[in-house]
Length: 346
Image (cartoon, rainbow, N blue to C red; front, top):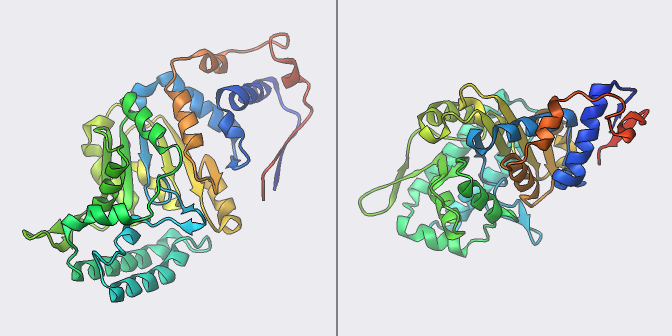
């Protein structure tokens, strides 16, 4: 697929010149071959507006499984927080078999670009309700979770420490919104030494009895297609998020796009989508939905670069966006381009 931009007027040319500067010098990571964008100028304008507002106006909302964690490592799928529980310390072989059968049945439905969210919704509820019932039957021991995480092959994306460290240094709240298992999620980031005070988690948490055995899951089930309800009910109660109208949202599912619905009076939302598999089937839907799409990119490079720029104290580029150039002031190359063609990798 190729996008053509024909003859354009001066203000747009100015934006394109600034975008060239942004990608080449300020945020070169946006020029990576794994990066796709439908509206480059809108992305640039949003980033600049968020940078002008500064770190004090920013919050980050992120999914966890296959967003903050890698999708694959050394040719093998990285386990989700539910998959980490597939350990003989916690569950028996029969439970493992049944959970895998459910995965093979419902995961293809979850990522099926040909089905609507409304069609998927009852099936996702059925899937995770059955999984949770299986886990409850196993009476999983709370004191064994840490060991199961340590023995697992869970891996956070390359650059994760810079991501978490930078957010806590800038005092930017990070809300992790996960359809996984909150107790396991916490243990993963704790063992990676990034469970900082600015990190808030909304997820499915286990309820243990007095002996430390799993007896239920707390509250309403959270799955990949009802995060909007969770965002509306939980986000409003977090004081740290108030007065932060700019949002950087990270996810790997179209359902993750609703995670920012709980943000009241938002001003700018920049969405980054990790397209991990079934690329050709889902690429068009992702490009039409996320501002930035990262194709099979196992790093946090782009997110870190965008964060670094937004939280920087430089205002020179943001100021350029509000100025009007005369032909003599505008970079020559921006005025001399009769057409610009952007190839999008297939």
